[in-house]
Image 1 (cartoon, rainbow, N blue to C red):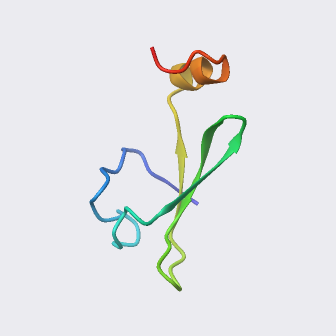
Image 2: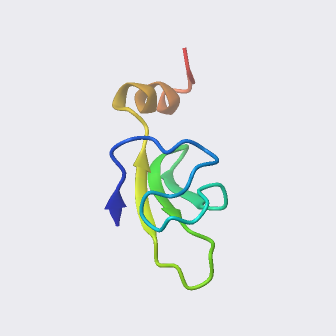
Length: 68
């Protein structure tokens, strides 16, 4: 999987496959998910990239406090 270093603005094109970013499917693991992967929904496209929350935000979410 490719690792996106910068957040991708919604409504723009995917930096990897150049398809619209909006229909990419966000998947995650953990409960609640704080990291995972995204998949392009265009048939035949193999674009995949990872996502994760900043460690401090992930810790707050896992502790049940949410965003402060």
